[in-house]
Length: 115
Image 1 (cartoon, rainbow, N blue to C red):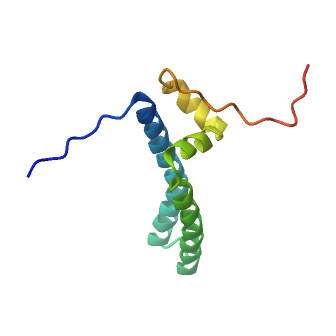
Image 2 (cartoon, one colour; image 1 turned 45 degrees about the vertical axis):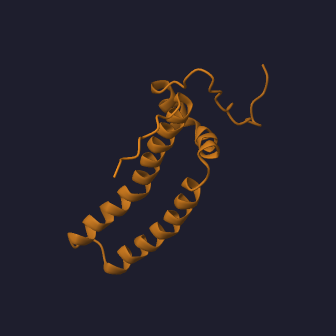
Image 3 (cartoon, rainbow, N blue to C red; image 1 turned 120 degrees about the vertical axis):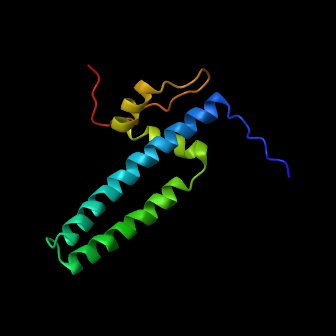
């Protein structure tokens, strides 16, 4: 049987996919690294079973939210990610968008005053 030929992504789509992949990695580490540490503490006898069970329960609730967030359409997700300004500004400095991609403006800060 013949193999399916892999389509090459457009520069815009590739940039969006890279953005989503890197942000997902960041957010999953943010959620899973503390849980991993708690497992290590439990394994070493420094954390009770019930405390670990509670941590798993809390993780589960957050995990569902992450799945909902990352289950959105790629274009929508790329816009939402841009609103996480501290993360996005660092990322986009190293990954400039290709020509034709318009970045989402920063959210309006109601606390700013014109000089």
